[in-house]
Image 1 (cartoon, rainbow, N blue to C red):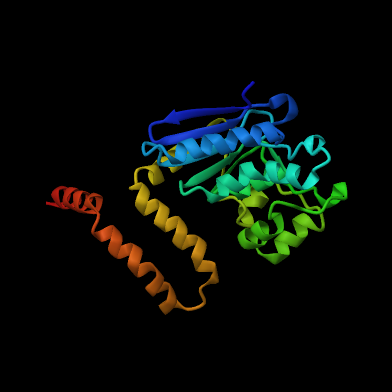
Image 2 (tube, one colour; image 1 turned 180 degrees about the vertical axis):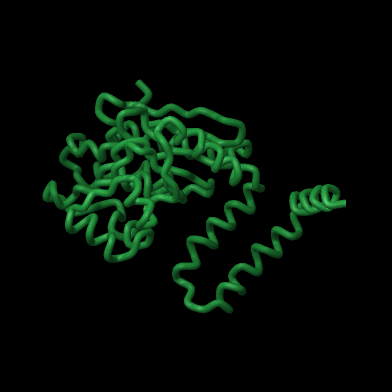
Length: 248
């Protein structure tokens, strides 16, 4: 039985974790479904952006570690595979966090380019409370997104964040009412989906590269090749001509 719903809203694909009885906890079957779905969506040129959310009442309650079995290393890696595939996608992605995001469920949200929160959202790493070291690159993602102090406060000191506090520290971009969250996420995703996919992919690559760049002149040089490439694409010529026609 499928635990993942994939719906299309024009060029935006919405992936909904659909196991509300277990609060959408990540298990190996669900993660396998996510990998397959993302592979398919990435091969589909009609898809320009992704929204990831959960079937209420939760976004994702973490990992179901009862399925690890004897090969614990392999089991963990299979559970990581879903959000790691999301993190690696070339398609712009938004997490619409509509409830609790716990442990590996936070990793799923962190794997997206942008996070939007509903009023019911709650961000809780909870690893240390369970006597468990964080996994899946959680400490790296959190420090990269919110900085070392907030990462330490949430991971080491167990401070959970509601939507407003998550917005204040930059963990989420904006907070909305639960009833409007998904529509807002789809509308925002549609802006990225309207861009040529090749341009969006190269912008994502540049954004991923820039944290390791120390100097402005280095950044200029890194952006030059993809910008020249985009100038010579037919989509740019078409859109520039349409803009000129509107102006005149």
